Image (tube, rainbow, N blue to C red; front, side, top):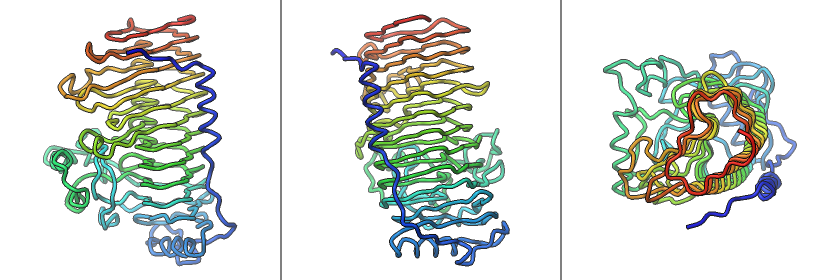
Length: 438
């Protein structure tokens, strides 16, 4: 099998085409201030009913802006409707309840790549179009070492032996997926310990997330699933909790992540497409994703593919990004093996500046985790790394495929690597090309 490498000119053309296709939704020039529906920004008054009434009336009127003026508004789950822009003015904060009951009834969601009915994400939409969360305000999930985070099972985040954790419940959900149990029968909310994601748009079209700041998320921060035309721009994620990925497009098409700053508790951007049996059942890849002009500061992968990538990932472009910090591990991190399977093809990084990583700039190790114990060897091909400057890292490259399923087509062109602590590790890679200085 041979792999044709994508050229720099072709990569730019494809990235520009994604940028041109992904356009923000437009909203009628109508405002629905939440204070007009009884919301009070005193930090204690429960504003759930007011937010819901404003959103429903805005949607019924044909769309517009549900505005949140300065103040702190206590709320539970917020559900978006088509045509609605939830707009937080400067000085406005939505402070979300720590009570799990505030995120019932259960909704269709994904937990670590497996579909189920679980606690509602703090902000949620399903099957909607032309929706947005915008403004200069703050979305505060209020998670900490006493609420939500201990369910991770990590002592660093408040869990102690004998306390409940998500790993107690995970085997049942995973087995249901393996057995093909209908999603409607996989109900794991009250009494279970799967943390909700912060903002999740499920099967939506034309989504905009712009300008807002996310803090203290229970789990993943932004999670578009099965969506098309998603624009995330000028967003700040400052949430160093367990599994606090910054943005996780999953089984999505045509996504632009632009001008964002990620100070995350896990991967900054993690592209996904479902996990194992459930990923093969749904079988929708993530494709046509552009990441540009972003800053990734903390913690695991700056740009990660997987590990829930059974449905495959293709056509990912990153350019003009700044990466690095004392707590950031990897630059490009591709996570899969023969248990997860899937594919990653046409992954192109251009004009990336890296200050400091604790591990490799590029890592793709099929033996990570379960090793070679499954029946679904992954396919990874056409990885292009161009005009990258890395000041300090453990290695430039760790690439290890299987003898029976090698990594195919890895190009490093015009890259400079400064202080590298260890030599590169490369095994079972076909078509590794170094062009330019190291």
